[in-house]
Length: 104
Image (cartoon, rainbow, N blue to C red; front, top):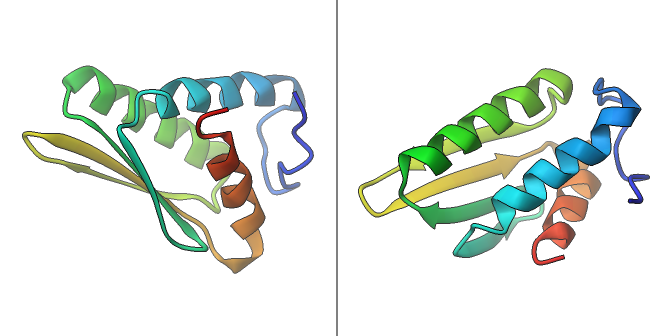
């Protein structure tokens, strides 16, 4: 798995990075809709479920711990869970790489 897009600001040990990418791939596979409202933003919509909400929250917290340039926002309604991901201008290429993984 090619991870050249992972920035040096990421403190996750290199050996663990492919595992984290696989966790995101698994979560993304459950999305019913993906939107890119701006260059520095991605939004994933999932069916509302406590399991998905918990998995998204846990993964977002773990990712923020090693890559503080990410901002994750969860919005939950009775019908849908939305996980929005945003980054500042210097890290747009990371978000672009994540967006490219959707459906891969």
